[in-house]
Length: 576
Image (cartoon, rainbow, N blue to C red; front, side, top):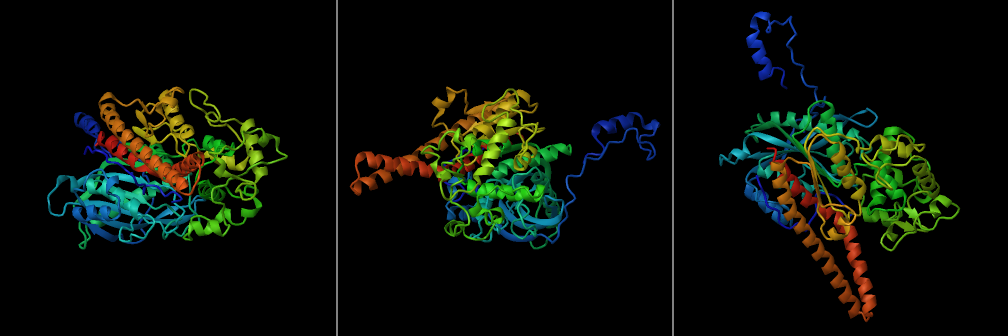
């Protein structure tokens, strides 16, 4: 299923602030040759083969509900109506059946709860297409950050749902090409009774396996559903992908499967905060991120529920009552900003005094000024000073400088929040499946160099499984190459690498071209408007630069997502 990748001007794959062999053939051969020794005797376990560990104890709470069916033509039309055709690699060849599932799982304190999700199956519409029936691979999809509580990836019957475009894209790109898609909504979302949402924690790996197991149960039930029968069942191929938060969760799910001795076929995490401690240290040092006033409260709320009483003193007084429990929510995000419940982009106090350790940090620059304010800032300055002090006392192996060969995570911390980051840091994970990392080096929301690039450096020195890293952004390639930064890193086998590398080059060029066009057009419009208002050339140039940078801040992270999805598709094709 080789595909070419058209330009992707859209990004619905992230929500920015805009997946038993008890008796093998080998053991059968041994048994045949030693039959007189009693291999088949129930009382003789010399040649017994252990059952693989069950990946989950999850059960379906309700019968799966079919929310929507599409023919291939209807799916193509729905994608076009949503304006997403450029983000779909090839026209669907299969129709799809969308199932909504509700299943058991556990929260971060081990409490029993439920979670919902989507199971999207290909159907052959009577066209006898072998790629739309029989045993099909499973694509386990981990969604990106969303502050919207009613997010539901099974809601392909509801274009108004916040998950609709993402669901449509993964349905068209995977189920429409013959894969079974299982896409959990995560506990805390949709109809889950959990009153918080686990966020960037290793436990999300097991929660994904609960969704995977429940999805398989639903597939079995759908086969007997007279209203929407299917000729599809799951093969032994399992692929995992996700973007942003979903990139981290995809890797956590792969780790959870590895820990149970059942690794996935191949995995492609994209733009995730894998080296969580280094990422947090970078932010607290002043390398602010766009969207941080949403992401970080979600993170601390999750950890506060997992570790208990973790956030006292973390937030500035103005937001200490509202920020910790605000997300996810169905309230309008812009409305929350205007109501003063959360600052728009400002994380830190601009010019703190009385804190030598903070005063020694680099001052805010015009490019990161959006993350600072003297009046409306999210984090308590005293907390930030304590955090930076802990960084210096217990340094990280990636930030501020990479320490070869493995950029080790700190061995300890005196700060509860930072201890939680250390506990959930994925950089030391040694995968048992082939991996494709992906991202963009100028990502303003999930810093590339301390996450994807650092993970690749670690794996290149330590990993036994093959992997590759694709940096989608070629626009600053020359400058980065001077610092030994490569747009493509690989240890893949030559036959696999040849195809992935060729696809990567084409996808990188398209992303870079579209990024350049977007930013150039934005600059030109702002420049022209300024001139029309009587501004000088210098003032118009400044207006254009500001507009272009603002556009990059708001669009870049989401814009990378569909390109990484295209790369993942090519990568997975090598292992089908």
